[in-house]
Image 1 (cartoon, rainbow, N blue to C red):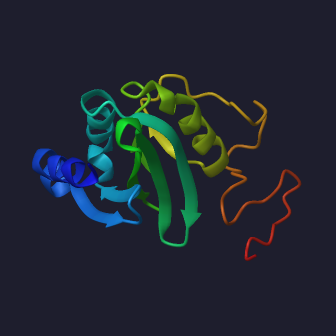
Image 2: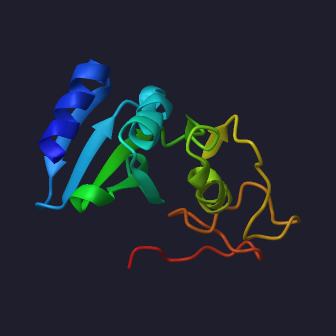
Length: 155
């Protein structure tokens, strides 16, 4: 099933598919062009009848990685769409209007990592208080707490 999905993706989206890594029989990671992610996510959701399980974001040394984990329940498979965003200005088009389940998790990644989700339908605080210090993102490697102290994130 994963082979069929990957081949279909390559045929439909061509150069937007950057890399494919089959981690196990049940899990495949596909790196995609961030500009094409909304189209690819919509294809997974609407055309392939996949379910968005969750999205995960991480601040890495070379940029921000987001994984969009889609389940193909009928095939007992998970395919994760992977994008890498710019370190200095992490920004990507929101998929929430096309895949409604992404709405809250994109808000969380905005709050905690400072990733801009352009054209998100409801970008307001979800976890942090409305008066949270702007530009202070608790899941970034360089996070400073509300008192301005630095945290050692090397562990």
